[in-house]
Image 1 (tube, one colour):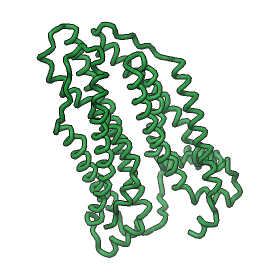
Image 2 (tube, rainbow, N blue to C red; image 1 turned 45 degrees about the vertical axis):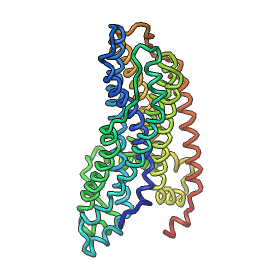
Image 3 (cartoon, rainbow, N blue to C red; image 1 turned 45 degrees about the horizontal axis):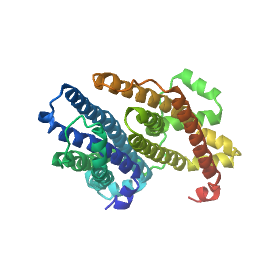
Image 4 (cartoon, helix red, strand yellow; image 1 turned 60 degrees about the vertical axis):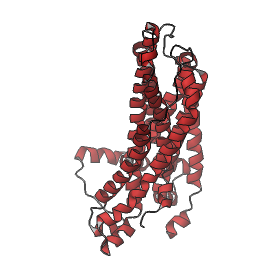
Length: 382
């Protein structure tokens, strides 16, 4: 088998994201199905209003959170497949030269779907472990009759079986699509592509220093990593700020759960993105050091361009959590008595921003030390 289980095990980022997505969506969707079973038992008008608010909340959370995390998982899967093919294109070219068809090589990529199965299965099981506490929290004021936890087979099919099958099929299809290249193109180590760059842009690029030009090219060549950096800072910003608001809007335990999920998503995605950036530019870093560039200049060229990108992600996360909470409180729960009024918490945003900047800069320092330890001799031997 060309692609084995060991290769699929490296896709831990997909497993983490799908786990968080299924954990949240399973809890809310299972609650949605179970709470609808007691609709006929509701007698008071106030309880009916609260019931409709809970049903609407479950729908919004599943669509917004589940959709966002699903999109990220798909982008990450495509990125990993492309990265694997680019890294092993010589071996793949040799196989094609030996007579292997594109589909015969691509069908071994189905194992990448195992990463989705691992994450969805853990998330599904974890949701049922948390569900008793979650149901009690949703009906904390006893405004609804007692809600019994039921097992719904459709949720298992939609959130575990279907994603596994779809991710495996997508892996095979995308690998087949990327392998539709001439054998010589796969066997070549570096392909020089002549692009029609406008003259004014070429003149502008000449005015840039080598470090600044390399910084721009690093961002352009790794567009998927730009998305992951934005997503990591987005998760940190949205979940940390939202978790503080949960103390007044819901409960401290809900805030802790949201904070935990946000931090796991943020650090996992950021770790994978930055590691991939450095590993993909080891030869470039080695050559820069040979020509006398300092460690600081190497870091600025390879990692510096992602700093403003991360702050953009933080701003998007701040806007997202504010809009989501305003919609929840002002539209979904507007007719429920006793619900607090949500206002943007500027001090919490500042605290979150300070912590984010500190954590991000610490991570950049740690990775700069990793760049410092890159052996020029080992790279040149390869």
